[in-house]
Every structure is written in structure tokens, then in C-alpha cells.
Length: 386
Image (cartoon, rainbow, N blue to C red; front, side, top):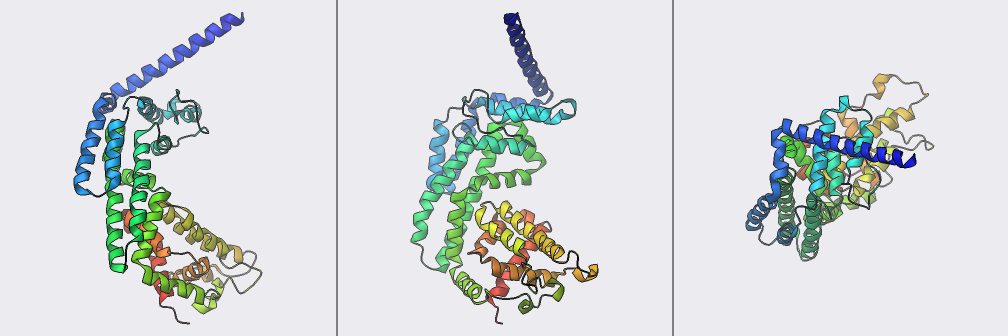
């Protein structure tokens, strides 16, 4: 009896897996461009050619040569299931209205089934989530490996170089080169992404090229890159940073009234009520995130915390709503107060990372307003004489 049930379960599982395989095949036949993914046995050749082009552009960059060695030695069959999972995820995503309990099915896609050491189950909400979690397994995913190799050798080469840079002018030139190298890798990684995964990614690049670029910038910015860039920006901006640090020390006990903040927003009048503490704590988190988009998000969240702090302060107090309207001048003054209290080292460097690598977003959305506001705060603090 038990043996029969076991046999039935095996047959059921076999039939289910065969059904899944047939659905994948059917989906691929519907989208002919996705067939490219299974014909890319020579995908490495395309990527190696792109690296060769980059070598001529950046002949002194150690990481380019390491990427070439890495690509040439990569076993281009061992990660075949990664790309199968991308196909399956896209199929589930496009047919999700017909599928019951899809999240349970998606959660099995983080790793191919033949890997034993699996991390916690992850529910991918979209294609980019799925790619991100594949990249984390850099030993078994080519793109993830590229990112780690780049970060490692970029850091090793430039850490020592920055120690020998002398003077603001030379520092500024070095930073320009660092930014160029990082952007060159991002564009290379996008090329690798399209060759490695084929049709699905090519569709995404054609539909939303800016989003794919932003995604690869986000994936590229590990701690190593962040540390080198912040060192470079500090070196290029050391005179200005010295003035900024001097003013932070001088005005560490500044009050809202000193900055001519309207009385309704002087949250430090009552010593029992913290003045913008939540906003200050939020802005301080900009030091613990590495990517330009996470830093930008911290600034946006800080602006929301300002409003939340004001609302909390006036809870159960009588005041008209018109007195709680925060105009641009007040926002600048309140942000200046927050920046002075947050005491963030090299804040200009954090802003520069956003400007260099999230330029499209900051130039073409309301998010740019808050970045400009922080910049204005820095200038105001450096010129402050109270």
C-alpha cells in the first residue's frame, strides 16, 4: 500500500516537471527572440571582445585585465540553469493572473535546484529582484562574478594611488578618472548582461534603457567602490571640507531661532520635545549606504521626516494648517539645521556620488530639488557667520 503511494507520488512529480518543461518551451516558441538565450554557447566571445575594446581605452586599469582572465576561464555551461530560471520567472510574471499561489513558485527561483547551500527563501517581486539575488552568488553567476572582480581590483589599484596624490588640482583629475572607470564598467556590464541572458534583457534594455542602467549602477556599487570614491572626493575637495568641518564645530549648539526658522517650526523651544531628531537620524544613515540611489532615497526620506517631526510636535496642540505650510525658504533653513546637527563627514562626497551616477533622476524629477537643497545647505554653512 505504502509502496504504491510512493510510486504514485513519483509519477505525479515526473508529470509535473514534464508539464513545466513543456510550458517553458511553449513560452519560448511564442517569443522567438528569447531563443537567443539557448544559442549563446559563444556568449563569452562577445563579452571578451567588449573587454578588448575597453583595454584600449583604459590600458592602465588592472581590473580590465582581470575581467579578461575571468571571462576566458569561465565555464559557460555551469550556470545554464540561471538563465532557465529567468525564462521561467518571465513566464510566471506574464501569466500570473492564471497561476494560483505564484509567490510560492517564484520563491524557488533564487538558485538552480542542483546547488546545495541555499540561502533563505526569497520572493522575487520583479525581474530585477531575481537578477539581484542571482548576482549575490558570484561564484556561480557570471555577472555577479564580474561585479566582484571589478570591485576588488579597482579598490586594490586605487587605494595606494590615492595615498600619493598631492594637491587639490591633481585630486580633481584623479576623481574624474575614477568616475570614468566606474561608468565604463557599468556600460560593459550592461553589454555582458544582454549577451549572457539574451532576449529577455534585450527587451528590457530596448523598453527602458535608463532603468537597466540604474539597476547596474546599483549592483556595481559595493563598499569597495564607495570607499575609493569618497576618498577621492575628499582629496579633491579638502579645502572646502576643512571649512565645513570648522563650521560644524563652531555651530554645533545652534538653535532653530538662530537660523530664522519660523516659530511654528522651532521644535527646540520645548526642551522635552526633540528637535527634528528623526530627520537627523535618517540623514546620518547616508554614511552607511553605498549606492547613489540609496543615498538619494535617504535624502528624500529625510524631507518626509521633517514633515513628520512637525506633525508630531503639533499633535494635540491648536494651530491652523496654514501656519504649518513649509515653503522653500523654511525647508532650506530646516535642512541647514539638520545638516549642522547630523555632523556628517564629507557630506559633499555623498552628494557628488548622487550627482555623478544618478544624474538623470536628479535632473528630471522632483528628487533633484532635495539634492540641490542639501548643496545649498553646505554652501550656506561654509559661509555662515552668526
